[in-house]
Image (tube, rainbow, N blue to C red; front, side):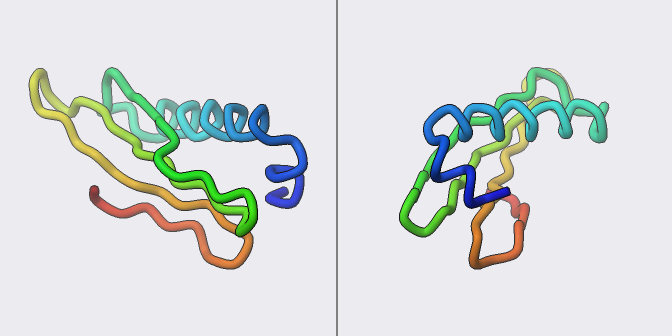
Length: 79
C-alpha cells in the first residue's frame, strides 16, 4: 500500500527495498550479487525509484531502474 509508504517512511522504503531484492533473487536466478538502492524518494508524490543491479556473468553487471508511485504504473527499464 503506497499510502503507508509515506506514513511509515523511511522504514517503509527499506522494507520495500528488501522486498524488491527478494523478488529479484527468487524470480531471476541468473543474477548474482544483486543490489537494490533507492535513487530518488519523493514522499509528497508517494514515489520511490530504485536502481537494481546484478552480475549475469563475472565482471558483467546489468542495471535496471524501477519506479513505484501512487499515480503511475510500476515500471522496470534498463538503466
